Length: 117
Image (cartoon, rainbow, N blue to C red; front, side, top):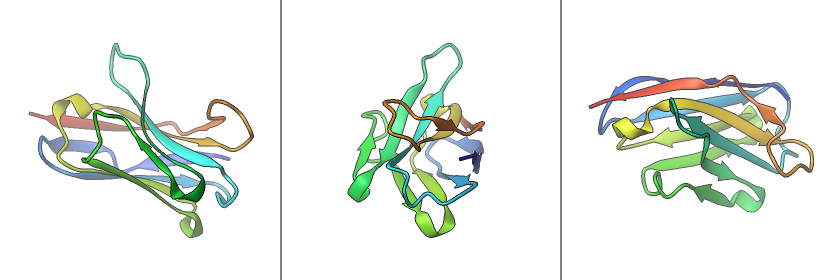
């Protein structure tokens, strides 16, 4: 499965942004999908994920501000980012667990999000 992200850009602190990730094929049977981010000189971080039964996970740093959702009909994963802060600046990547693996086995190229103070 190929994943293509979009929606990144430059936003002021306190603003909002919506990221999208479109898959090349059906995601109906994909167990889980997630958004990761990586800022310069920092480790990659799991930001939010959605799995079976619409279960969700959020990193503590984004709880209450970000919302992850998926639309199987549109083969898409979304990340609604609200009240963004400069520390949210990073490359955001979409990932999927297509096979029964411990780590995601499909990754997008990423979309850059830059938050200005």
